[in-house]
Image (cartoon, rainbow, N blue to C red):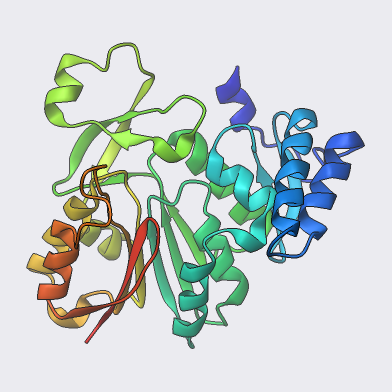
Length: 289
């Protein structure tokens, strides 16, 4: 039943938030950032989520979007508290944007980064949102279509890994942001009752070729611990002129390693000539020297 709901292709606007849910949504968005307003905004978000179940049609960053706040943490954050979502990363992206900006979003989920870049990037910009979950990919295509953004934003329904083929996506209950590509051994043994879906697997080089890109101005990668499988094979084969000029990469750390120094992937990226310009709670931002 949820799969049908997430594939809803009804006209945008039929799911506009109303009642108390809509009231608290408006309250959460209207409060200014910073203490103590952030605390009131969190209270308003909790109140709003009680009254908003299923799809919500909303305007965000100048776009018409259909979101499902009860499906994932990140989707709820951009709906209720868009100003506080990943502010350091977005500040860097704003600095990096220029004419013809090319942005590749691997592990796009609902496309928060992609649509935010779309709202600021000028004419000639190109955005490629890569997402393996079929339900999320349908939602991305729907939101691209209703905004007439098909010429500037392309959706690739696939997982990105070290080698192409077929794979199994493990679906995280209650939070699609934790979906992950199963390892070969895990896929063969089964996932212990966790929901799964078969997916197409491609390499980053495949994405670049299929999308007809001649450069990547910024590559964002968030694939739940498999970021190295996206980046390393591409940089090992592609000429340096085709390497991403900037990177925003989730740098996974175990509990014991949190804050204890650079991750293996971070060190590998820096060794190839990138400079770490910002380290946030989850991500590393790099520029190519």
